[in-house]
Image (spheres, rainbow, N blue to C red):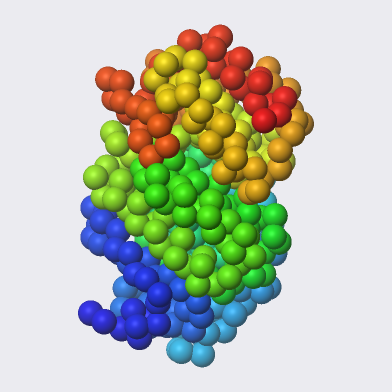
Length: 374
């Protein structure tokens, strides 16, 4: 069905999921079309808009007003901004808020915000009354490119990042690239790390496109952002359609994340996801080069691509503490961390599967080296 939002979007990417195909609409000035999106993909009158207390007063309030003006009964729920809020406690507070508002299984959750919001609100939707629909409205580069697509939801726990959660695909995603101008420049830049990752694991041309357009993307030029967001989402969608529940090829999307998540957790999430994953990609590329699995010069190529996007230099954390989180990674088997390694830029190296078991000493050395700076 062609709707006004299809016509307004610069691009629409369809993502396959067990529950059915859902669209990701990408382009400038799409928020005004949210009522049509809900009436088409999640037809209901009652809506819970979930946002953090930084994005909420800006975009969350605008979304709530737009939906209320179109006849929806809107409940707005917020939580403190930041990764530190992505917890079971926040999940409990938000679900209690929905219960207190009397929302039933005929409601829909609309998540307005960055990756923390889409992960947390997605987990709320996945578990509320055993599951209600969700529509994502990502407002950060990271959320548009990665977090809002693929159906992964979850919260962080003491043992590590995203270790409690569920797969719960959205009914639709509305990525309005105009809103990126409200982000700080540094956060826009850091969010592009996931686009670099998509190119590194899947498409050398996309990798080159992100590098070539970096300045326009960091400056939040809406059409340039729309082009790269849509291309990146399309690459991720191809992987997710093959393996929605991460039993095989979807593991390649975690390139850089085994070490990256350990860095985030060890730093108590004071380090941004983009910077941590950048460190992880470089460390894991160096591991691959050392094993003769990854083409020589790959780590240097990644460093050149990532340098404009995130802070370089020493990471403020104890690398010994970060080591302890490696075995808690979701890809671990029998307590042994597994790593995604590249063959070269644009191609992942396969072993007996999509991940590799690495000697602990080598992995720890790579982690410590990248923590000291790249």
